[in-house]
Amino acid sequence: MKLNSIYTLIACLFLTACSSEADWLPNEQTPEPENGKVNVQLNLQVPTFTVEETRASNPLDLQIENPMYNLWLLHYNEEGGLVEQDTKYIHLDDNGKLATQYTAQLTLGGGTTGTICLIANLEGTPIHNPQSVNSPSNDKGLWPKTLQLLQKELLTLPIDPKVTDATLGLPTKMVMYGYYQGELTSRYPVNITLGRMTARLDIIIGSATGYSFTNLTLQLKNAVIKTHYSPLKIVNDDANSYVDFPEDKTFANKTITNSSQITCYYFTGENITPEIGQETMLIIKATKNRKVYTYNIKLGANAPGTSDDYSLYRNNNYTFNINLK
Image (cartoon, rainbow, N blue to C red; front, side, top):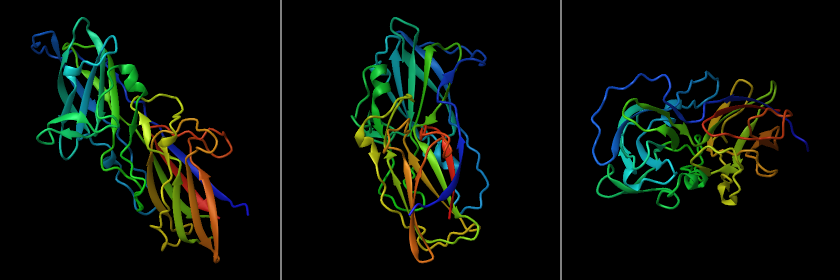
């Protein structure tokens, strides 16, 4: 039986996390440390999101996704080598910060340019207390020795595919990434915006006028749980990056109508130009007139019928309004 569902897509696009030294007034001179080091003031912030009004239940406070609780600071020199003595874990605030300043003491060596990479909310292995960490909680437990290797390396995201409730895998702390590449000096501050390393999917489910559904179950298939630190526009060819969430029955006792909708939230790594069969997909099962209907909905940046490219990009919010009929 061929089943129909109608959905519309709203994608909130945000600039890729990066940095700029333009439009900043010169900073007051700060004393330079000795031994070939320089103090660089970092002005850090995260994207802000607008809460859209919706009739759906269970609205999510968007602000809880983005605070910075801690930072890993990596310094790569102008040849792209990791300056290991400058690697630092920075504990910011237990309540999280949406913007902060930090003065980084960096080793210049023989050049005045380099790359600063910042990873927010990636925990580490404590030495004596949560503020003192000696190794990151990433897949290898250490940082790549070159910038090129960092850009290619995959990180397993803090997305729990086994969670089956209305937030469906919502991380308690959102991993974010930002960088600056250029001159390193105390003469002016560096502005860095950290972007989320995941995409967020807002699923709003209702029904077409005159239809009523019960016994709703949901399942996200081909969610991506591994992503690159750097936002590369390449296909993730690691087969272990894709997982299927279990069926979720949070809304099994809800009656879905045109005026009574539900909302759930998923997080996934970016899924860029996926191969056929690897598109991120939502499976909906619901009962209408004592019959169970199944709806297979591919999720992506393009509306149905406009393209076969079902890409999902990091640091984006996607809203899917799905009407069953």
